[in-house]
Image (cartoon, rainbow, N blue to C red; front, side, top):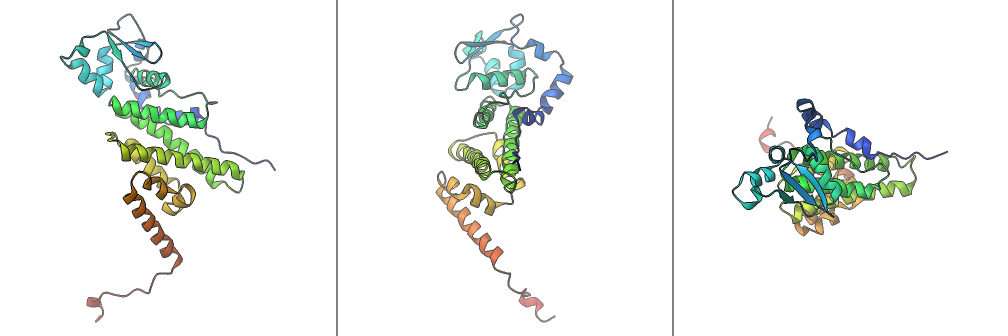
Length: 260
């Protein structure tokens, strides 16, 4: 009998996170036509290996807190006709800019390995956090949540899924949790949507802490960056195991009720 594997493609992930952009396109149906339009552009965004996008300060200011501050200031950046974006892949920058101009969050092709998709969504979240675009950060978080969901579906399907596939999916789930934990423990990240989304996924998509410890070793993962929190969590999980194995003692009413 052939084994079935649960595969969630990038297009499936993206279909669940396009609501914000679709609302924007209803209100401004021709906004996307202005993307990389040199005709009325007053600033050129430069990034990557000689990549350039012709943009419009008024549109950028309306979408991003960073662009709003930069172009409304009296600093030289407000009057320059070129703006440099550094530290991100070309795909991530293009996705952010197209999102600003009303397009749904773009995805990598379906044939791209899941590891690339995870890095891509984390990159989208990082640039959204830096440029203060909260709706884009939430869209990236939704993409990550959907990947975690697909990993859990495979992890629960051990009876019909090859063990190697199950272990691989659990590993991906753990890598996402570790990546998010490392990000928030070691950096001052203003946008909390990714932290909230990953924690929500851990408890909505799994049976809880004991499962997380048994399958992705969550205490060691956290302890690597935050020894106190990791050991505290391990102690709590040990107590949960004990309490689930030992029947609760008979109920003892408080002393003030004993006379009734």
